[in-house]
Structure formats: structure tokens, C-alpha cells
Image 1 (tube, helix red, strand yellow):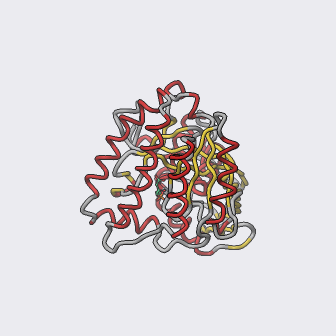
Image 2 (cartoon, rainbow, N blue to C red; image 1 turned 180 degrees about the vertical axis):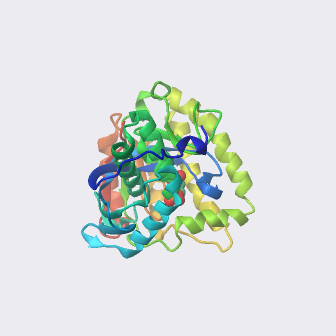
Image 3 (cartoon, rainbow, N blue to C red; image 1 turned 90 degrees about the vertical axis):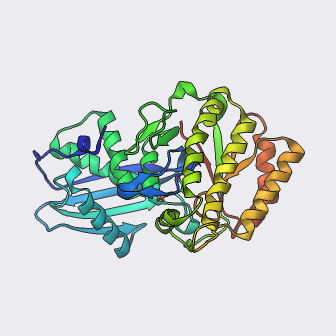
Length: 352
Ligand code: PMV
């Protein structure tokens, strides 16, 4: 499929309407870091979709009023966010030709704490894209569920790259790779269920809130710094190559190799930040203390507790429900929670 396949229909009938949609967040296992024009990823990525960390959004579209966007986050008006959404809507007009023909009031709420540092852009843009597709169905005649989800993923990508993976449950791939049929740089695709070992379908993600508040460097700036990073090409190549072992691991359930690959990806993401010019570090002391404790715990117990990181200081603790989870949870409560700012942890599971 190409961008042309997403151009919107010129026949539409608009009317005032409110729609509501919800979309979960996701956490990448093979990371996307670095992009080309028009939100084309420099390498393919794969993520788990979460279950409880979600954004719920209602979108009121009012005809007979000039185009403008008003946004409320948890009841509070957010002018900066509204400006961002206005720009985004102008940018996607060719895909939804009715989009600039009314006023919007968007109310949005995250199920996770606002200051937690958990990225809300993936679930946020996912929910907005779903609302837009609900309006589109009403104005232009319904598309199939499959087409509508694919276009929501396509549109979400143009808001925030990783958001395109949040439209599907389970494991989701974004970015063209020969290892996954139908994969595309333009939208996310669900990783085939029959290619995933059962052990990976019942997984926890407990997010340790090491540092609540704004990140020092946004992901937009971080992606941009890959343009001049001397290690960037090698990194993109490695991420592409990592799909080969990932595919084998997902099929045969090799937990040890999975742990090694996922932690390597997380550390590589942060290594790229340290090797940018200017360099930056998003991990905090607590992040490193937790990582070292996880490694000690694994050495001593051989239990499958491991971590991944997104572009921030928080640590995503990953572990399967395979009989050892109670011992792992007790260890987290006793040893790792003390490294968070306010005993903050968001307990989530992967959505299949
Ligand atoms: O979608 P963005 O631009 O916020 O970038 C997200 C990048 C990472 O979270 C660090 C990795 C990923 O693949 O989600």
C-alpha cells in the first residue's frame, strides 16, 4: 500500500457530532529511534500493547463554526496541546478532506498519572485517530473495520510515530521488514498470533516511576539528533537484523534469548542518546540502581525478571505469569520500589 491509498473521499456530508474512543499505550521491544521525512521510521520496531494504561478521548465536531481546536486534559484547558492538534489536523487534510470544516472540542483523560513520565503521545494520538475515523465513517459511509483500523494507524503515525502501534492488541510491528509479511513504514500491523509462543501472551509490565515530570529532551529532538549521530546507520542496521532472532525467539519461547535481546535494545536506545551531539542522558540514578538489582536478582534466582526503557528514566519491569510471578512481585515491592520518587508503580499487563 502507498500513501495514495489513504487519500480521503471528496463526497461527504458533515453534521455536528460527538464521538468517544479509547486507546492503550505500548512499549517497544525493538526500538524506533530515528526517522526520515513524513514520519517514516529509520528501522522497523515491535511493541507490546498495554492493557490498563490508556487514553479516553471524546471529540465534539461542531459544523457552522470556523476551524479551531479546544482541548481539555483531565478537565483542564490545554492551549499548547490544542495548537499541536490544530497543526496536526491541517497536516492530514488530504486524508480526511472534511477535517478543517468545523470546530473541535476534545476532552481527554489518561488512566495513568499525568506527571508519571509514561508517554501519553502513543495512546493520545491513537485515541484521536480513532475518533477521526469514527467521524469519517459517519460523514462518508462506513469502511470495513480492517480498513478503518489501518487508516487510524496511518493517521496516528503522522501525530506520533509509535502511536501507530497502539491501534492493535498483542505484538505490533511498524516499519518494513522482510521478517513480517504485510509490514509497512506507513502503519502498524499485528504480529501473527500463531507465530507467538504461549509464554509471551501472558506477560506483566510494571512501570517503576523513577522520575515524575517533564523529560529534559523531547523524543522529537532525540529522533532529530540521530541525523548527525555517527553510530546511527549501524544502529538502524542492527535493529533490522534483530528481527531475525526476535522472530525465532517469539516462535520457540526462548526466554533467555528474549531477555538478552530486549535489554540490549533498551540499553542501545540510551547509548544512542549518550552518543548524540549534544549528548543527553535520560536515565537517573534510580534507573541504574534498579537495573543492577535486576541483574543480581536474575543471577541469584534464575527467574525471568528483566527490563526495558522508553525515552525516559522510568523502568518497565517485564515478567511472564509462568509460576514465578509471586516471588518476582515480592522482590519488586521489597527491593525496587524504594528507587521510585513516591513509591510509584503502574501495574499493567500486555493486552492480547
Ligand atoms: O513516537 P515517538 O516519537 O514518541 O518516539 C518513541 C520512541 C521510543 O519510545 C523511545 C521507542 C519506541 O519505539 O516506542
